[in-house]
Structures are given as structure tokens and as C-alpha cells.
Length: 247
Image (cartoon, rainbow, N blue to C red; front, top):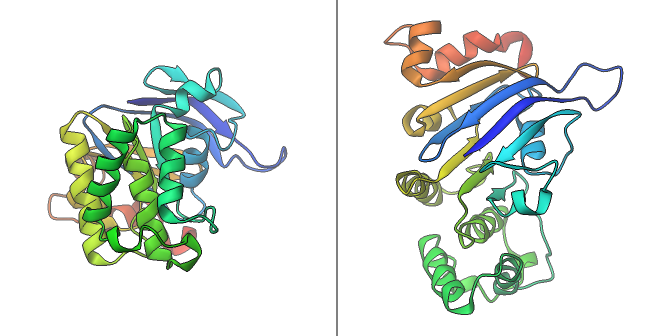
């Protein structure tokens, strides 16, 4: 699980906060969808949670470990899949995966089995010996997904993970999310695809102008902000006032 406590972030001292006094807890065994329009603060939040950006105030705890106070220990509690799958293009895919295994100190016997399993799931077995520079965007995204999963993370954090993927790979991700949640692990992902969030998530959070405007189940959302027959997309668009906010 992880906790975001009173976290704020500004990119310029005199500018509006990109994230303002954010409080959020995501529990073990849960798939949590993080929703919001462009510029709402989703990626900024994820970058603070993963230690890429420092928070101006507040704290972020991964399995009780503060990423502010113990960044290396906290980073061992999660795996992150960014929205832009760019990495060491001169390496072969298998070299990159072995590098990740070395960083996380995964024994050779375990890593071989995990690499084989996930490469097979994502249809990457035949190209694992190729250089990353030869991969399409979708293949790079699959490689990042495999690299994150071979570490068997307690917390799996993904930023727009299905962008650029074919339907089969997108289905595999959803399958793996359910598997990991069923095993008591945490899955947290941002998305613009309302249909995916509606069908997959145990809870969702909606962020607008850097502030969390809703957190709960879809049933809670319909009770508080809509009606039983409304879709997540309809309620979401009304809540964020899409005509003036999405850009």
C-alpha cells in the first residue's frame, strides 16, 4: 500500500500549485484508477510518488517507508511504468532486463523463469535478443511492462499504460492487474480511458486543478455525483467541466 499525506508541488514560486494538499491512501489488494483532465496533476503526483520529483511539502509512504527520508528503501517497494517508454536504446532487450534484475538483486534462476514467462505473455520471446532501438513504441511499452513485473513489486504504478498498445497487450495488462490485486498487491494507474477504469477499478480518484475532488468506488461516485444509469465517463466529464478544462 502507499499513502500520500498533505503533498503539494509548484513548478514556479508565484504560480498556482500543480498539486495542492493531496491526501490519498491506496490499499493492498486494490486496483486504483487515477483520473483527471490534462494538466490536472496526475503525472506530477506519480513523479513525486516514485521519487522523480521532490514534493514541496508533505510526505509519501510506500509500505510505510518515506520516499523523502529513505528514498532507496522506498523505491524497492514499487515498480513504475512511465507514459514515455524511452530507455537505453543501444542495449538489447535481454541486456536491459538483466540490468533491472541486477539492480533488484533477483537470483539468476528466478530471473530466467520470470523473463521467459512475461515475454511469452506479451509476445516478445522472438525479439528479446534485438536492440531496443529497433523496437516500435508498442514494443518498448511491452518491454517496460516486462521489466516492471520481473521485480515482482508489491506496488505496481503505471502512467497511462495502455497508450500505443494493441488490444491483445492491453487485455494482458488488465489480466495481470487483476492477478496482482488478487495476490494482495497494490495496482495504481492513471488513464484517460474511462471504460477501462469503470470495468477494472475497485476505487478511483479524480483530480482537478491539483486537488482531489473524489475518491471512492464507482457506486460511491454515482451516489454522490450522478445516478445509477450514468456511466463513469458521463459523470467524470460533468465533474471536470470538460468544455473549459480539457486541453
